[in-house]
Length: 190
Image (cartoon, rainbow, N blue to C red; front, side, top):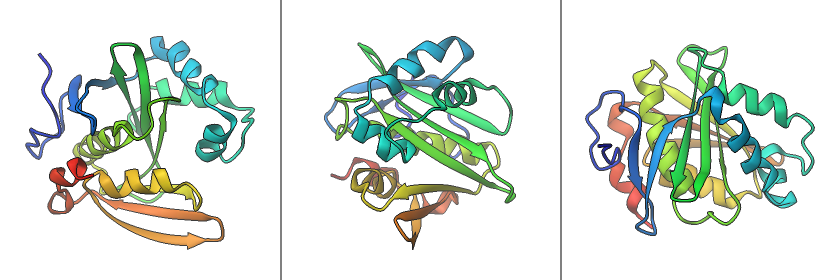
């Protein structure tokens, strides 16, 4: 039986699969994405509206979705991809990939059309942060379009301390994965 990772934070790397309770009370299963999940990931991306694709990929018509999908199922030790599932299937994906700075990884999240404002992204980021910390990362960074207020809220609500830097139309958010900076109760505040 899987456990609710946000309600049972032990300070160690969480075991996946696990579950998370969303803001709307629904329970989702969280698990690592595997090469067999390519079609589901691509279908999630293809079902996004042009606006949703623009906010996630900085373009409404990304020509690199096959490469993006492959990067999400790559089992290399410098990355991790977590998927959120409800009774209908995949409803969100969050991943990190290490960057050149030691202990730092770039993070990105995409939530399926029709599942926004439920806490899917927040649950994914909270759990992915614990996994990243357990894998030796000390910070996650994300570039977010300044107009993407929903993703900025996800970053703030995930329970980790964040700092922000605006550069033109992009906000760079740095998430501190120090164990003392994690407040799991913040991921339940709405």
